[in-house]
Image 1: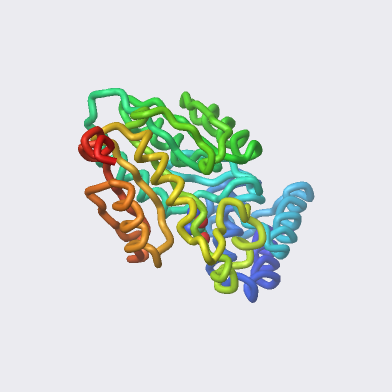
Image 2: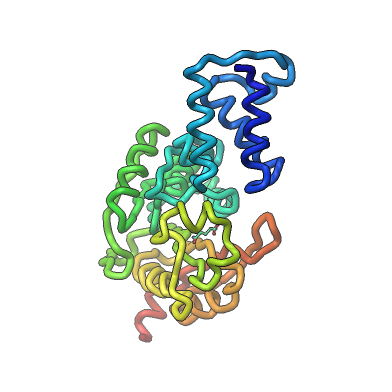
Amino acid sequence: MLLKEIKNIFHKELDHQFGKSEVAHFFYYFVEHYLGLPRFHLAIHPQWIITKEEESHFFKGLAELKNGVPVQYILGSTTFMDLRFMVNEHVLIPRPETEELVQWVIEDHKSSKKMLNVLDIGTGSGCIAIALAKYLPSVHVTALDVSKEALAVARYNAKVNKVNMECLEADVRTLEIGEDAYDIIISNPPYVLEKEKPKMQDHVKNAEPALALFVPDLQPLMYYEYIAKVAKKGLRKGGGLYLEINEQFGKEVSKLLRSHNLMNIEVRQDLHGKDRFIKSEVYQKSDLQGNL
Ligand code: GLN
């Protein structure tokens, strides 16, 4: 079959569901993944023929896309901070926004001479933890998740990306953390409200792990509350807490952090101009705790 015929079938079958330009992207991902060819290949070889076996991959992928499986799960991997990460239905697909959170930590610590202890809460695929281990000069990273299956993915990704990382199966709600154990705590916890479901894309709400996405409407900040407690005890004086947040709650999360004596609070916007990240620091720790 001609590759361009497959391309036409993709558009015919999927454009109404995803839109033309998204479908073109899917098709090019498949070309790269299943044929090992650059995405512009078809443009320079318009009569390119593919084998029956290659064809079957494309049709299988097409059926999965139709059923709402995200393309990253079909291909089994994605890119984050120029690194390759295996993904499956047990982990959230790394988002470009989260790269900005990682960049923030790197920016703040790239010239640090000392060994930094880092804790990533709710690591999922391990993308945040592994990127920090890769790009910061001297770190010891611990990746925590409540899901055994997610930790298996994170462990695999650490190995493939050749970083040392400690994996900890634990629930942030009951976590016992050592006093002053960390220089950096970072998290992209679940923050989408149940009531936001109707405006979400099907392939996100139906295919990605609910455990990593949703919080009850009446407790939108529940994970931030637990994380703030962990940070207050576990961060050293001068240590930083970096969080990804729901765009609606910049003010509320700031207030919550302040109430846990976290200071120097800064909210940053993501590439879409939405309040998406928040940083805070532990400041004059022992004095403050002495007063409690
Ligand atoms: N940003 C994710 C989304 O696309 C949500 C991530 C999260 O809940 N931490 O909805």
